[in-house]
Amino acid sequence: MSGHDEFEREFDHRWASAAEHKEPSARARMLAARWKDNPPGPVPFRGDPGPATPRRSSWTSTAVVLGCVAALILLIGYARIRALH
Image (cartoon, rainbow, N blue to C red; front, side):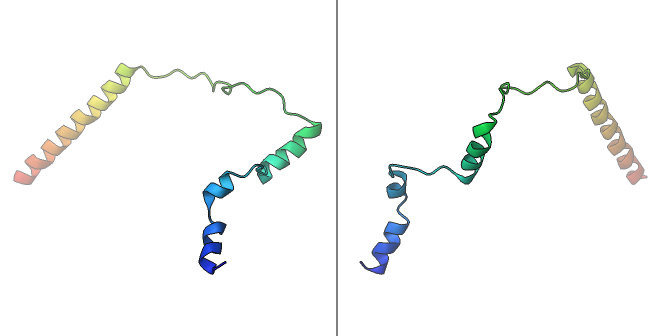
């Protein structure tokens, strides 16, 4: 075979994907060995909920944002008036 054909064969992903047996990854082998004698317990789909802290209502957040925008508008207006004098 020529060097070009060997290169094509070496990196032919379709040929590699069509292989009959695929070896598990190193992590899969490690976990299989670890869990052979001591299998993991059941795990819920979702984790435990975090601490129950009261959330701000949406109107409070809206009021804070609108207040900041109003303060920014006033500050820019004041700066423009000071610049004109």
